[in-house]
Length: 413
Ligand code: UDP
Image (cartoon, rainbow, N blue to C red; front, side):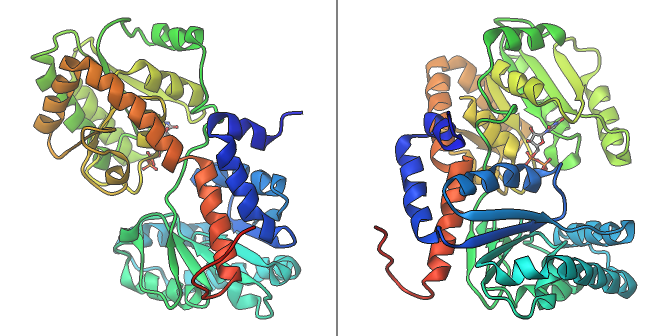
């Protein structure tokens, strides 16, 4: 029977899996619990969905618990999420009190498991206060912040800080997101799952079916941006870059694919502006996709010669990772997590303006050999740095290191 580890060995390497096994060895008698607030939907659930069974396969007793709450609680945690990402709106004391009550109720349910566990990973702010209600904890507690906490709303951060400071460590995705805390902060960037529908290899037939479904011309230069219709993703800048590049590449096609924006008034406004800017150009395809269109997105990323992600702000940019994994050079906005992934002349180009993006598009279509080389490097770069196995390796390393306290050197057998 093929195990998950075998499948990952096939896309990474046997060495990667052996390294995981080596790091897992000292953790084999340990119990690990991950806690978040949803089992489906969103990046955290997607990561845990694979990370937890993978670490179980490595012999570590790993569980995933999900807290529950009412609508008032989620209203509070949504505001908290926005406030951590910089929204300047204070949350009422009443909501904050309710937030603590819900955490206490969940702690009452989970206390036995959490207090006994050797390692507890608490994901994002929703369950952050559980620790306060687990005063007899035995193990190490780690707060994993998945969001951009570089400029949080001060009042909200002060509230969260009261809980986070009691943890043994925290994890942020990028160094810029780290806040002052009285414990070690680790940097662990996100990752993609190479075996998910979004990233798995597709047959040429399936890719062709998607091309024909959307009326995309074959053997014609194509660029694509896959993103929510959001101002920070700068779709208007992408259209401007396309129009400039088209002066030199008359057959150029642009695909802008994003989700349907019916429940997001801002998204709908941006989409209208995008439609207006695109006018009646038949070579611009604006695609509205359902939330589960993973294989379609996968195929669109494979159909494109170059993927653009011209964001003006970006936490990490999973769309960039996804595109690089498909061997596509990425022309990305010079911001946030895109800078970690797009290395000029190697995996793509960082740009600040539509003119800059157009110049790089023109360059790559002129230097097709370079385009191929960069695509190959892009894929290797993701294989080395941004696959799920790397994220698991860093989690294991973090646990081994916490287990050994402040020791400088740890020998693994
Ligand atoms: N995505 C999607 N459908 C869309 C647009 C985006 O499934 O219509 C996916 C995309 O493939 C990526 C994620 O949503 O996996 C977006 O993550 P990213 O970090 O790029 O940006 P965010 O939307 O979180 O700001």
